[in-house]
Image (cartoon, rainbow, N blue to C red; front, side, top):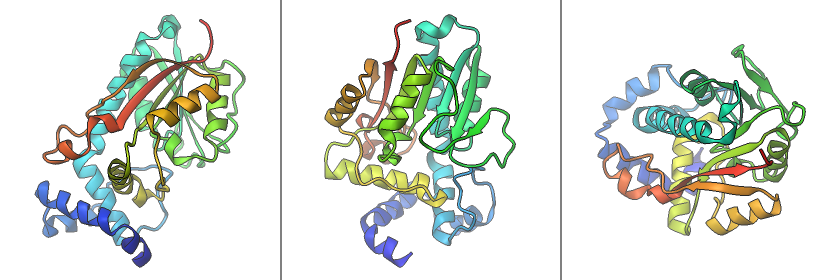
Length: 262
């Protein structure tokens, strides 16, 4: 823990500024840390330190629900505009689904969308439409789905990223990728800060780098994927004072990719 704090001194300082900006005092931290209401994600560590709990509470208090609602609505809108929208039902595969929240919202609020989630953890919650996999090979036949979704997943798994994209291409007509663009040291550091707040407490690794527009385009070309639409900027933090001016909309993007001719 000491080593982590030394390595991320700049990020921890920013977190303290955000606590002040959001009027979260030291006395507020006690109920935040004691009330056991964090996400039921299989990504969660079995044992959490004080710092893990602080990050989880801070994330839930500031941005988690807003982010989930905004992104789920955006994904539904994009899915329902695709040529496969006439299919009944639209079969969606959410790769790296975490606690199934986005998968469930899309299935419940979307028009005739049937969502399945996959991740690398056992189904300890008995989720109906969850399938565990090895993180590399999807346990589904070719053309099993109409749409594959990667929501803030690919920047965490650089090692298997190309393999996952090939697998997504194999099983679906379209791929929707939500991820981040970095533009240099400052934006990269801010994105790492956001990842620390949103993921470190759950045991998810923090990436050293994120996509640039150039590197993302190179991956698409390397995997022979055709981008048909890109949404950037996306304003995830407009509800937060100060933060909305620091975490710029251009750091967030959605890419819609066609893998097969319809």
